Length: 337
Image 1 (cartoon, helix red, strand yellow):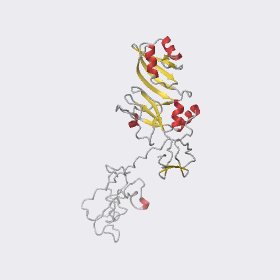
Image 2: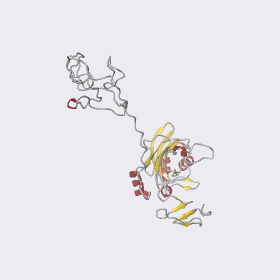
Image 3: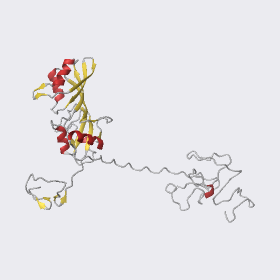
Image 4: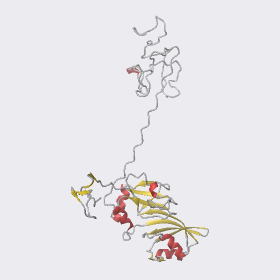
């Protein structure tokens, strides 16, 4: 793209390969479209056994790429590696300076492992691991070793190293005659996988990044983790209509029905009865009609019991006033039918 003249920096076409650009102040364009620097993302993954810690594998084995597919960045990559059969903490990021700093031998970022070896290690064997083991590429740096327990003729250890040699722990075991049977990384640079199931990941918190920066000088800028996607709002629960009264004209809007035929679910009404009698605990404007001895609630809605008089009592409605009995000489509200 550079050779073809498709790249511009601050409005000028760049044709020299390897031109250094400060992305914080320079405007970089490809085919006229400005390139925007991605926000930095920092992730901790609990890598399971039987997964490659690379983004692709020529042999077709599963990789962490599938596990990190939902990370909100175009591309993140692992910080270092874990063996195919080693589980535990694996950091991933799109910040190259962050990854380089934690992997540099001079930074001595600690890596804590729990190790199961074949054989009952004695104190002299543990001390050898602490001082350093002579490998074909040199002696390992001193490490911290804690004897956890014996399991028959097997030994469980907690090992802390500050190097990143290829298969270092397994090679230490082979060299000293204690073959490594199980290996899991508990933490890297102080970041653990506590609370994460194998195959799950989470973003590093701002506090965790602040601690890492204090110890190792990275990241250059502490960022808060991306906000999780908002969960879809739940649909409102449907509001049940009151049962129709016997003999009521089903074709005419009755009590509890909206005259404009709009859904009661979309327009629920609260506080039934006249304003001076309205009870805030009453959910539906049913307009009275509670029989003597009724509990004031249905199977679906728990409403407080109402003190009612003899017969039927009403405060609003279209078919009568207080104590209406259907007789011509009954107590009717004038003009109501």
